[in-house]
Image (cartoon, rainbow, N blue to C red):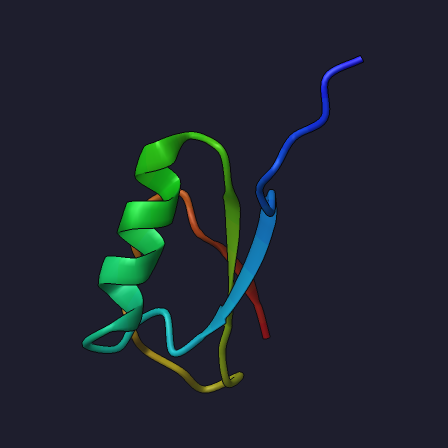
Length: 55
């Protein structure tokens, strides 16, 4: 049995912001992470494709 040595599920507050969008893109590009953006109900930010949304 092989064990993974990385975090699979990542939640980001501010995933639509200046730094958060690059962080989300980089994590998704590895193919090892699922990314969830925690946003306000009234948020209009456009998120990176592949990011799940939790309001």
